[in-house]
Image (cartoon, rainbow, N blue to C red):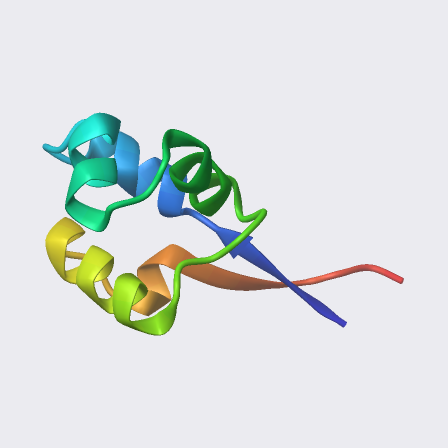
Length: 70
């Protein structure tokens, strides 16, 4: 069994954009961005592609699969 680890929050923190700017760019609330950053929810595919391009990161850099111990 694998779990997905989301590093989006790390890339958002390291970006040149503030959370407020990102929320305005994507037309989302601070709560929505927070949920994306913690992996509670995920952006839609078009939003995700736009966000990754804006942050200059690849999917493989943001989401990693880790094997869970059972």
